[in-house]
Image 1: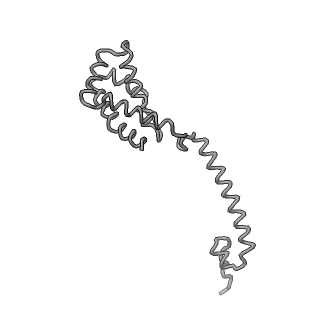
Image 2: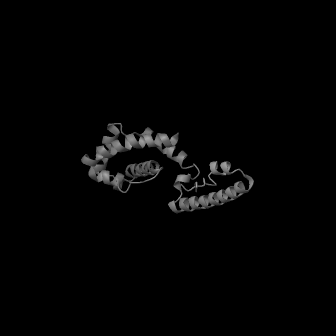
Image 3: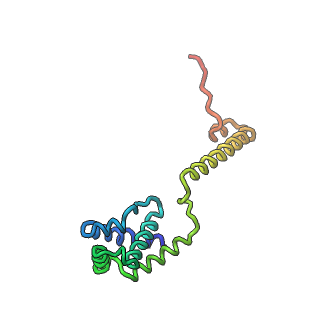
Amino acid sequence: EFLARLQEWNKKKLVLAKTTLKRRYPILYNFLFESMESKGKFAHVIETRMFLARIQTLEKDPSSNTEDSKAGLKLLYDRKIISKDSLKEVQGWIDIVETFPESPTQRSESDTTQERTRILFELDAWMEEWSQTAKIVVTNRNHLISLGLATRRKNMTKT
């Protein structure tokens, strides 16, 4: 549920903030959204967390808060793209999501490939055992053919 909320917030508010700032306040846009292109199932969580951290930096650190960034933040607040309450709420969602145990989708690709290979070897061993057992237990040739363990013999009659 919180992942879905974060994804929805990311699709609406974060995209709106990007498009609003890109043309009007490019310096603020670069600060807030630089190197924020994440991939994967949890990309929206990472992007939103980075956005919130950068907004907090702007609000707390006077040295990073230029006239351009003040005007850009004011625009985001005035247009109700973000608000203090919504940022706190979204931060709460992120805190909850980050307490989730590691998702299987976060495994590295090599781990997934190794796991898949191991499972395929186990399946192959089971299939070999099953087919050998079936060939011994099932004696009717038609049954073996229907199980895929034998093929039909070609008719060798001469004409």
